[in-house]
Image (cartoon, rainbow, N blue to C red; front, side):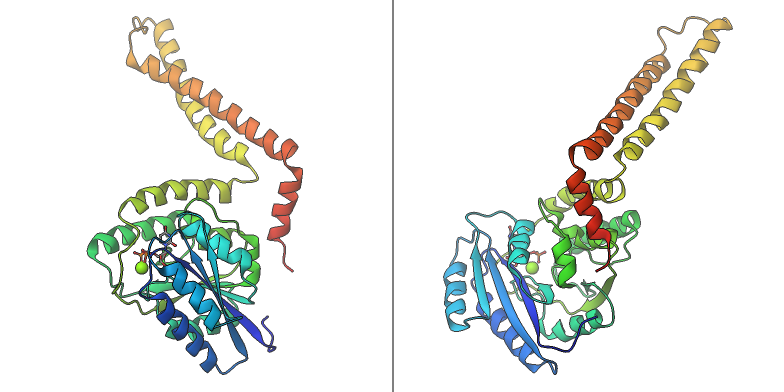
Length: 319
Ligand code: UDP
Ligand code: MG
């Protein structure tokens, strides 16, 4: 439970070429947090993800002007949103941690509703851009992406990709982001047993600068989905993933080979030139490979990494 002492709201905001909006955003956040009836203070962490415009200078000026409120972290080059968020998370000291985009598409006026949702018992609250004001080339693939992701992961969200989210600090402490896994934070958190919720948020069109993501994000997103599915469901039992595929292929290949052998014995003619034979052999071989891969993976977690495994299990436990 959140108690009533003074609480820090940290805002972790990745910035790639957003010179037109960072200072307006910082001021809006500070004003909204000031107006909250409870005892909240804000901490705004801008992570400059290799901007080539004037963003970093503006962030530095802001951190002078709003000492102890605005902080800046500069990455040496453009590492991508996940790494930028991770850098911000490592430095966030708040009880509640927000992520927001820097382009003013996310409205700071929604902050109180996020806080309310967290106080009602959620560990992570994700924004849902019900009326998303982006071109159809973005919204349509996004709809498909969200449907498939929620179906496969069983996490009932409508908008995984929304950059506007709020977390209790313990969620952030349990996550490690890399690659482009920021899209799957709710899935990773849900897998760790945290309570994940959703609120609708107003979404503004991008008025300044350009979007940094195109359609290729969904291709990469689906590859990441495979990683997330594999590592959330089978992290501690990889033998079941690979072994499962292996057994399936083994049954198929074995069945084919038994069938062909029976045919040959019963005088059904030569089988050496039948394509089915190739499939039978192929499936059987891949099956053995998959099962061996599963066993190696099991060795790997049992023998190589006992400490990591126990660290992982400690993340599953309540405090
Ligand atoms: N961003 C970033 N690094 C990148 C790409 C984007 O830090 O490599 C930031 C960007 O400045 C913005 C947020 O991530 O604050 C979301 O990016 P964008 O608005 O381009 O995404 P969209 O709204 O089009 O989904
Ligand atoms: Mg945007």
